[in-house]
Figure 1 (cartoon, rainbow, N blue to C red):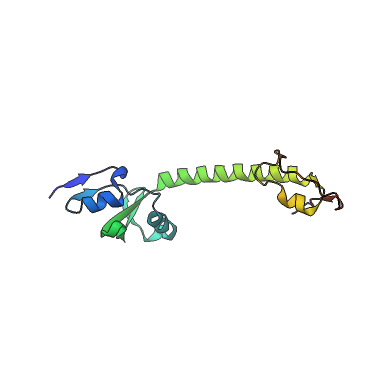
Figure 2: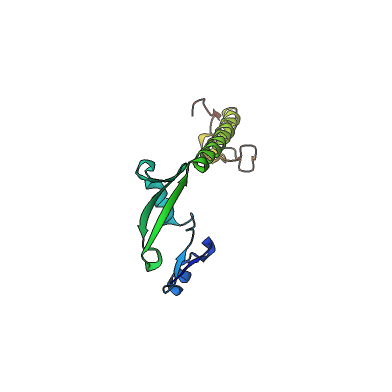
Length: 144
């Protein structure tokens, strides 16, 4: 029986159950919880070399009640590219957080409750500000 090559859109519970009699090969979507769990447990040292710059490991799965063999293939070049993108995005997030913290350090609130209600993500949007007239003025301290 020949194998059918399918794109990742094929890979769903319904399609797998309907196509039990077929032999098929497809890419499993990375959005599946089981795929993400395998990625978290992945040990690059235990992966076999497929070709220069590529490693793989076979893992069992029974997604949708069907016994399957998944191959996780790692491209070292793609991995390095993803790590650079991750580090760049992490640096941007650090810069945004530092900028927000700088703005927050200069804020003066009427009371501690007002400071707690301050929106974390958008410090320039002051819609939720309220005054507590009975409380002394409280400013956010550095290092908070």
